[in-house]
Image (tube, rainbow, N blue to C red):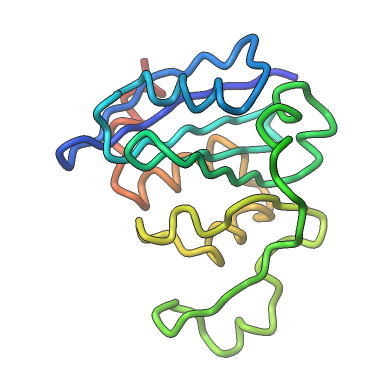
Length: 172
């Protein structure tokens, strides 16, 4: 399964982006180390993995510690060696949709599922909530028709303010 991976790191309020090499990865701690190496002094680092235009993963390190992971579809772990490594430590429980008073969700939308029934997201859906992307929004991106992993990554990066670095890296 082919994949593309890159990281964005925030240091002193500015975002930098770089490609991330995940070749030969054998455990999740190695992924954390490689993300940390992008910018060791970053207060926040995010890594994005786009796999075969089907699945996407976002990983988060705060101050280089406590790796948190979210994936658009648990099938990624079953279909690829990389997915198996990145998602191996996650206990699968269907994500709960928590609606906060701050969420901009119309009452009519509360009856609609946030995730496409064919998608099977796994991991910490709240990992970007403090950056302005609540869990409900992240889960909606899992099942939006016609959206490729690269589209999701672009939307997430723009939503959190790292869009410029992402675009420069994509165009390089």
